[in-house]
Amino acid sequence: MSDIQYRSNHPISADQFIALLSETSLGERRPINDRECMEGMVNNTNLIITAWHDDTLVGVARSMTDFHFACYLSDLAVHRNFQKRGIGKALIRLTQEQLKSSCKLILLAAPAASEYYQPLGFEHNPRAWMLDYGKLK
Image (cartoon, rainbow, N blue to C red; front, side, top):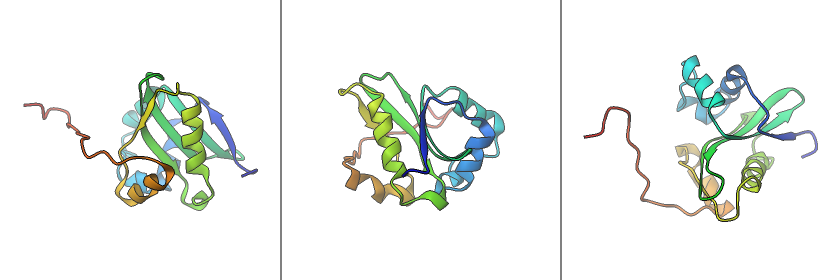
C-alpha cells in the first residue's frame, strides 16, 4: 500500500502508542490508562516495526526477542480505519525479516483476532501458560 510507510525500530512515544491502541481491540486488554506501564512497554521493547500514514502511527508490531530462537510478538495492532489492507501481514513479515531463519514467532491472540493467524501460517499451540505477578505458589 503506497500511502503507508513502514519503519524498523523507529522510536514512538507512549502517547502515540496509546492513541493507536485506543483505536483497536487491543486497547481493551492493555493498560492504556497506566502511563508508566505504557512508557515501559514502548521503551523496553527490543524490536518494533511501525506503520505510518503521513505522521500518524497506524500500525505496530512490538516484540521482545533474542533474534535467534524465540520472538514474542507482544502487540500487533492496526488502527480500525486501516484494517483489511494487509498492514498487519506486512508488520509480521517485516518483523520476521529482522530475525534469523531459525527464530520462531510466538504470540497470544486477542479473542477478536484469533481467527486471523491460522490463514497466515501460524500453528495453534495449546501448551501456552501465563502467570500473573504474585501468583507463584
